[in-house]
Length: 149
Image (cartoon, rainbow, N blue to C red; front, side, top):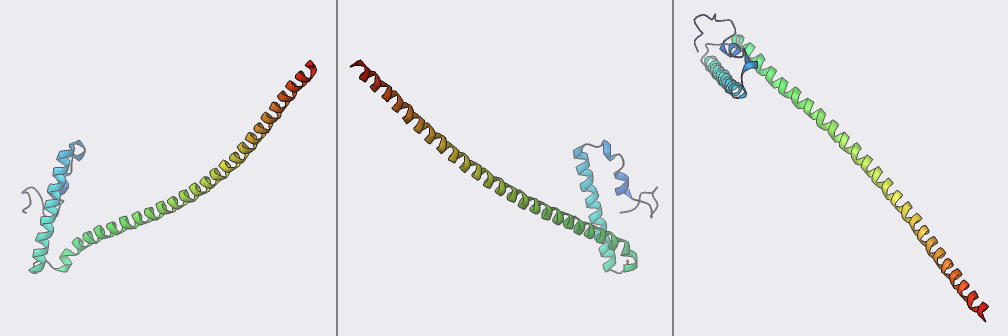
């Protein structure tokens, strides 16, 4: 790609300039712009590779490009390591929640059993009281019958 007539060879090119006023662009325009810049970057890398293959560019010339590629790779690795740490933290959190749930479930079961026992005692007590009250009522009826004679 030939530089713009007003543009010097060693100044930032059209990719950087196209990012100006990005804040004012709508989503579709931003997407189209990113696709266009990505296509330009790919075409640039392909051209650099061809010039390297035919000897026009030497390693001393492309070293900065190699650094860019390494930065991209390192960023990817750093991102992956960050995500791995986050996954480990989330797994620890899940285990902690499972232990807490298990402990709470056990406490709830124990509490349920304790209340079942209390409920049985209350029911038994009510039955005994009901039998006692019925017996007292019956005793009272027999007294009435005995007094009538």
